[in-house]
Image 1 (cartoon, rainbow, N blue to C red):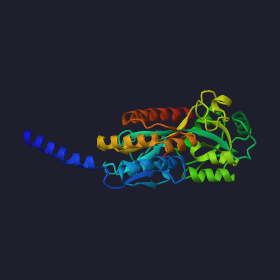
Image 2: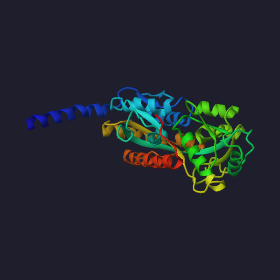
Image 3: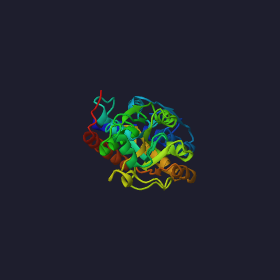
Image 4: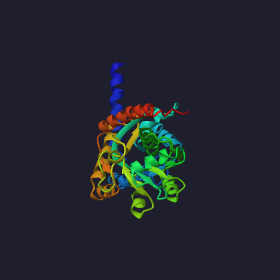
Length: 320
């Protein structure tokens, strides 16, 4: 019986090897758990063309916005682990377990991290109608009008939501949350004046800052962003120690064969090293990464712990 078992195991491995060697043999679907136009969608559309060219098969972006990214991520968590359905997730993946009592998947167990793609400093931006031109002035203005100002986000659990809640807690201000189904409609309403303040990615807001439709007050990272060198950090101008970045990561379903995960990572890293991709990412104020699956997994583990601590300290109560 033991001999038969070994024969079956070896036969299965022999059958699997050609399949791995032929991967991919058809188009790949990349689920983006946001509507088109936001930072995560932009990152996906920047990195995938070179990957598709190397693969010889298209990578189809499937935008599944809404539900604080849970429905889109759940699609990938429950997909066959064959490398043909993958995920471009962001900071919400690490935070959602601390924000929701009931999760449709286990973030730590149901995904195979492929690679951290980019980190993105966030800009604290306001509509020009807000009479504040610095972080200190915004804090003072908000303190004088508790509950009168509103801020936009791409939805509950989004980077915009999380970072602003940290900002509110540290600054001691009361600003009302207005969640949207993605960054694009949130920024559209911010530009239109329906909301007045937001932490938004450089990927999605630089064009509006340059045109004067939004005013950038601060950068969320510890260091200034070379794309907007004249914009001080939030830590410099109002809240010492403030340092939070958005990020995007490619993941596959758990139990995806390591050879497929590693192939995806290699192609993602090659794409990020391409001159035109590097130029586009730098021009949008982001930082390319392209690390290994093991490093990406360690990063995600750290984010799960980090946002659990943030949620507790900020008094964010999990919801159903």
